[in-house]
Length: 389
Image 1 (cartoon, one colour):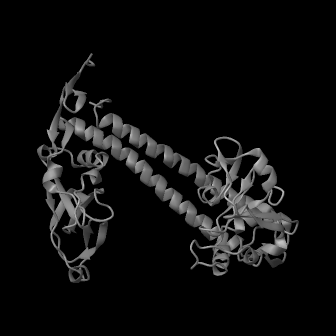
Image 2: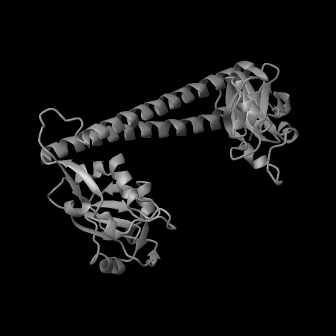
Image 3: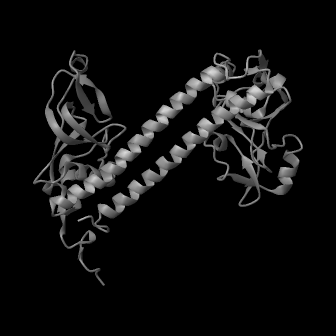
């Protein structure tokens, strides 16, 4: 039974006031013009767009107004962006102009949802055909007011997403600046003025070991088995598993415990994760396990491993030309750290930096939810399942 107010068409169920039409009914498309490197190096400041987005600047423009650009060739083939003002579009981009009062912003969301890269034609250099794109079927509200309402609603969510992205970037810059001050002693917290020490990981760790050098027999369920991917993604939920009996053998040599630090040493170098949960797991050879002694607080050391000072030092001791890149276990112990001698100051610094990261993570979660909200809204609004007019 057809839902009231909707009709069945060749593209599915759509609102009665909507129509299934080719893209050519709501817009025109044209490939950009040729441009040379000499043109790009000229003194002009007019944006020049190609298949991979902004390529540079040109002294001449071929368009002035509000358009949609589609990457025609290159790594971002099928990529859709909105452009306003004067600009030059190269032959690697397709310029989209709206027709018959169709809303150009609404159109950009429609094109984004179509995954245009799938229509790339095979050749020596795959690319999109204008004639093929304009023949593709879409569904469109016949009333421009409904297009406008959809465009406005989705634009509001995009504005929220952009504001969250900018806020995260700002918070990260602030944290990096704070790390530069607090983890080097250049900036001191109120109430602290004692000496700092330069130590090595070998001096602040009671033991540094790596995981098993043999690929275990994985099972569907069992004991978690961590590898470099879990640390780099900070994801200890989606893990591989080994049997309890194999785990019992492996932990005799290397047993992860709460308060230890995992450090990537093969493939990715220097990424870390403080084990701040009760853990019963084994690790692979790609990870080193740092067991911290009483010379430094584990939380402070973990924050220090995120600093540029630590990263540069550990990379300088690594075999970056190896495949995959790696750092030998013997070299890890020589990586240097800086720390205030006061354990209270160490904890105070760690707390401040941890709170900053928690705030960033909170905003990142909000950003993730906003992106999911946008995806859901596009699914509802661009198909007519939910109406705004």
